[in-house]
Length: 109
Image (tube, rainbow, N blue to C red; front, top):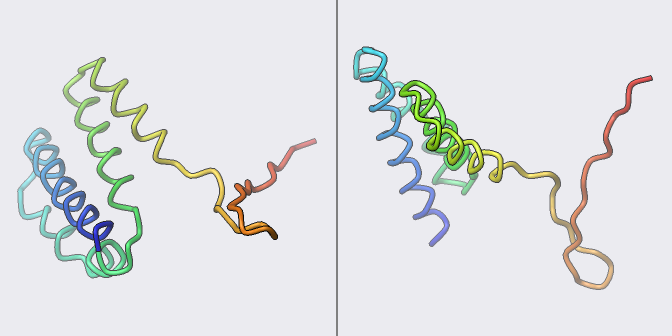
């Protein structure tokens, strides 16, 4: 329940950043409703606990920092957005420990 509350707060943060981004680019604010009323955002975000709101929050923050040309904020948002990426899915090893598995990289010849 705590994780879903965090995701709800992140979704509200995404909407706030989206509002700021829309006003910065002189876009009509009704476009915010396209995100807020999306059934995918409601069902997958808070409903099932997917962390997509975290990635959206970081990328919108980065977009706004880039639009306002703030170098320090760009670095902070870019670092935060990079750290939210997942490299592999944790899985249980045979002894009950959680092991990190990464997908093998494809090498071109």
